[in-house]
Length: 420
Image (cartoon, rainbow, N blue to C red):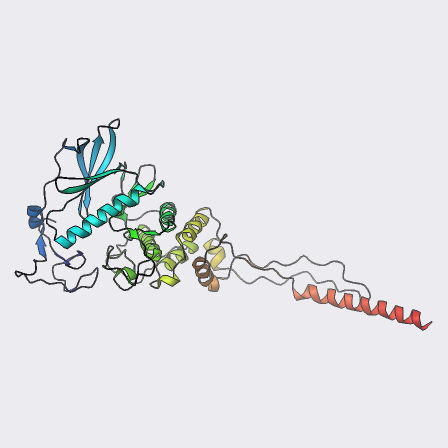
């Protein structure tokens, strides 16, 4: 890794292979020439080490309060450390550092803005799948964010240690937690869009609790804005609308969650073919397959309408309130009644008959995908299909004829009485 070379886009900062001519993140043309007016975009890791400041020393005291214990992660514009809060019962905290060295004025402004935004966002949010914010400050030319320390590992590391994929039942539970916290963010006023959902930005504790981390590019959705100013997100996980074409909405997080679920099930890295076909083989979970396929629609309007819908659908699947594949895929139209229908007496109303036939509670296979997608596109209090059951014609006709003949008989009697 130390000898690899990369091209970094001057437009969005995205990392690209050395031979690339266009940024795989935003599509901006990459300039590989170096002159006095344009900084070189070819950077070796050795050069990065030369211009990047060293990690904070162990036992150094920040703000005369937070004692650094070890570095536990890095990414974006800085590093993350485990520290001890010496003024609050020596509790463990996570200290996120934003390094300002080596950034252009524009990059520095963007980084500082994103960092402050992250601090403000987290400070106003309280949810079980979000870390708590304790403090933020500037020291030695860098910004620092102090938050709750999460004992665990990233979802990326967790999956890698288990062969690259997870059992479907475990993926469903992870999806429920992610949909819950994203629904919480989307229903704030104004909405908060995470925009960079991927396994490396998700923490998992040994007990299975999921946390969203790294809000560096999350931002408030501003109604009426034509499009985002720059393309943000990670290749393979970002929705098509995040590539500078249109305003990013909560539907972008819907797409990213679908990609994460797809990767956890299949073990396929989505960055290899960002918008290529996504094939899922889930014979025992047909509803989950339909749900993920709807989430991965390139057109935002064809995706599930809300994270709340996705959360409830995943909970319904986890509870087993679905038809098994063998029942759902091989369902046949209801058979005709084997017992004969009793004929009505011509002068008496039909008093009793066979029980009312019920329509199947689940749609036929040829209509399943269409019904499921239509149901997910519109918020509903219940995900169960609302079908109306009507009696068969064999029951209705005898009753109608019997009542009509009985009425004619009574009218004939009245006419005869008047005749006398």
